[in-house]
Every structure is written in C-alpha cells, then in structure tokens.
Image 1 (tube, helix red, strand yellow):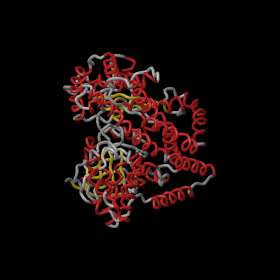
Image 2: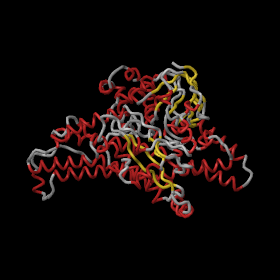
Image 3: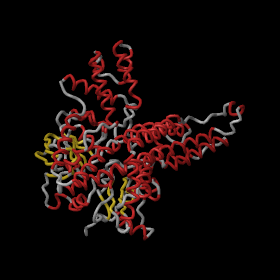
Length: 613
C-alpha cells in the first residue's frame, strides 16, 4: 500500500494537556529523539485498540495493558515461535493505546520456526484438556486464593506486643510494602496464565480459516464461524444463573416480592423476612461467589464494577427475566438449534471433498478449532472478571489508607497514579510512619492529581484516529486478524475513508460476526448502565459488548460494534445466542444515531440506514 495514515509523531497536542506523557511509562511514548526508533515507529501500522479500551486510560489501569504487552508477545515470540508473527508492540497517544503487530523481519526465518512451533504447540494440542483442566485451572485458582487473602489497613500507632514476644523481627510498614508488591505480582502472574492457551486458540482459528478457504475458495466467514459454534463456555454461567434464579422465584412463588421496585438492600431485607423469599435468598447467596464476580464492562477499567459491587444490576436483570418468562419467552441460548445447524453445515461441506487428503485436512482443522474454542471465552471469566473484580477492591483499600493519611482527597484518586508511583507514595507513607514525621505526599499529590484529572477529561473529548503509520502488505499476526478483525482489506477500507470516496452515505461496511439479517430502530449505547434504555426489538449499537450485557439479548434484534473480528467476545457471544451481529464497523456509534431505522446483515457485514431518526 502506497498510501499511509497520519505519521504517529504528527498527532496534534490537545491544548491544555502539555506534559501528559508523565502519566504513563516512558517506553509507551512515540519519540523523535531516537532516530532509529522513530523510523521504526513511522514504518509500522499502529491501530487504536478500541476493542478493549473505549475510553482513555487512567494511569493505574494501564497495568493490564502492560501485562498483556509482555505476556501475549512472549508466547508468540519466545514460547511457541509462531512462524510468521512475533509480538504486538504498544504505544499511547492522549491516553489511548495503539498497538502494532510485529512480523518476522527475515522471511528466511519463518520456515526455521515451523518445526519448533509444531513440537511446542503440538504438545499442548495433544494434551489440551489435561493441561487446561488439571493444570491451568489449578494455577489460576491458586492466584485468586492468594489475592483474596491480601488486605490493606492503616498502619498501627504501635506494633502489637505479639511482634515482640514472638520475635517476629519485621514491621507493619515493611509488610505493607511487601503486600503491595505481591498484589502487583499476582496481577501480572494471572496475565501470564491468561495467554498460556490463548495464543494457540487464535492461531488455530486462523489456520482453520485458511484451510477452509483453500478447500472452498470464497467460503463466507459466517459459514466458517457456524462450524465451530455451539460450545458451552463458563463465561455464560452468570447469565444462566440469573435465568435460573428467575425460574426459581416463579416456581416457589416469591416473584411478586422480587418485582417490587425496591433497592437491592431493601429487597434482600424483605426476602430475609419472608419464609419463601428466604429460600430464594439463600440460593442467591450460594451462587454469588464466584458467578456475580462478573464485570459490568470488559473488566479492563476500575470503573467496570461487578454485580457483587452493585447488586442493583443483577436484580434488574432477574426482574427482566421474570417478566420475559411470564410473557411466554424462552430464555437462554438456543444451543440445540445452533448445534444442529453447525453439524448440518459441516457435513454438507465435507461431502463436497473428493480426496482423503482434503477430508483429513478438513477434519483436523475443524476438530482442533472446536477443541480450543471454549478456552477463548473461559479465560475471560477467570481473569478479566473474577480476578480483576477482586483486584480492584484491594487497590481501593490502598486508596483509602492513603486518603486517611492525607495523600488524597478521595480514595478514587489512586487511579491517577501509575503503579510505580503508588509504590513511591507507600514508601513515603511507611518511612514517615517509621520516623514519626509528616510525609511529603499530602503536599505533593493533591495538586498533581487535580492536574491529571483535568488532562484526563480533555482526553475523553478527543476522538482517536483508527490507525497511524504505514500499513503492511499482509497482516499475519493471529490476534490482529481474528480478535481485532484488522486485516489487509480492512486497512484498505480505512484508508479509503468510506463515503468521502463516493460510497453510499447511508451504508456502513463491517465484518460478519454472527449470521442473520435484522431490521429495526437503532439504540446507540456507550456503557452497560444505559441498557435500561433498550426497547424490545431494537438493534444494539456499541463500541463493543461484554458478557455482562447478555441479559439484554432477550430484547434486541441484533448487535453492531465499532471494533472486533470474527473471534472477538461480542461475535462469539452473539453467535451462541443466535443474534445477527456485525463487528468491526470502525465508526458505527458515530455513523448511526439512536432512533435510526436500520438493516444489518450478519452474513455480509453490511449496515444500511433505511430512515434517519
């Protein structure tokens, strides 16, 4: 491609944000100071990771981006040696993360990596279920257990006498600092496990797509994704539990009490005082841990609280489910129907093959895709939802300790510090506590935090460009293709700019996410708390969706997202619920307005505005 996007070094500074770079690690900055690095940056493609980050980053929340920057890349490059792809490089511009797939520079190195990949990946494929069930789940469970055991409280005025009489030999200040290090380490460790299987899951999907395209040139993506649908990931369990609780309420006869417009705490008190309601409440309490540790968003931001943090959310969903059941609706996923369609398509395509070699390639590709696909969703619940929910709570404890010591005006100010800056603040707190003097933090951090808050608000008003830099001839990195949906063709579409090049101003092209055609009024939503505005039969338009949006699927006719590829969470979730979906439109939330009458085609990725609101 001869045409380039804006050079990453030429992105204009937002007035009033000068100096914003100090809010983030230095290696995340595009730089002109190092000519070699600057040339590399200009010659790479950098695309905005709106799939995970629809909002700018609070400095602390960048920890998860740092974690997967390391983990994903190392598994591609150092563990599996994925033949055509190394890691994914990261930068940050005005609080928004841009990422760049790094290819294998020397083409002659690609075939040298193949035998290593086959040996290493082959071991995991041959032992997939054992490694996942007996090894991975145990490791992640251990990390979560250690996290739950950590707590942060104010430093004592005087050490307990047991420290003396038991000869402990260590102080509370040291222990506080040690626990903070362990907290951060557990977070990074959990993300190592996050990618232990995930890179292979996506590499398998890319291989499956390529194999099927060789066997059946031009086969639609919607057909390919149907062939591996119909699995039962743990990620759907929270929604299933809400449906089960709604059915239980109707079975035992406490649904009218639950339908009363009471706040969660008031409702729980009323249920506890009711003989039948008490039975239902006991069941709720039994399944809350861990199934209500699901975030209202993707789990990547501290603002993405869980159902356990705000019980109003699951109670509202349970009420929606009760009303739907009473209205005669069938809730949940049409798994039997999806499996029947899956097997029909696979059988018909396989019957078209003429040779044993082709049939063997078909069987191997399909069976492997079906084997690994559940992990592509299950890890999401364990890490982004369960672990993150607990992790954010521990950091809030630290924020409260620093607030009590006068460092912050509010515990939530902690999110405006980088993780290394929090360690510095804690050293300040602990050494001042140890010496009996006033720490510097109370005179240093409030002014800095006020400035950062102002900068962050300006970041939120900025619209990040879809891409920066120089597109490659071919995109080869598996995550880039199947998760973000960024392919060579997509980059060409972005470069053309849509309707500016004479395209239909009422049409938008995305990628097929889930098969089917839907027509209805659009509802553009920016966050999960706006789901209450959804009306029956509307088409949901969002930057992306998360598993916690599943209760809304009982209402909507289809979904459209700005970002994502065929294996992004939004596409997978919608396929399993049988909802037509178009992903990766790039600008659906800007192009479409609430109330527009639209038609969407989940098989072609086309969205058409039939009538403007």
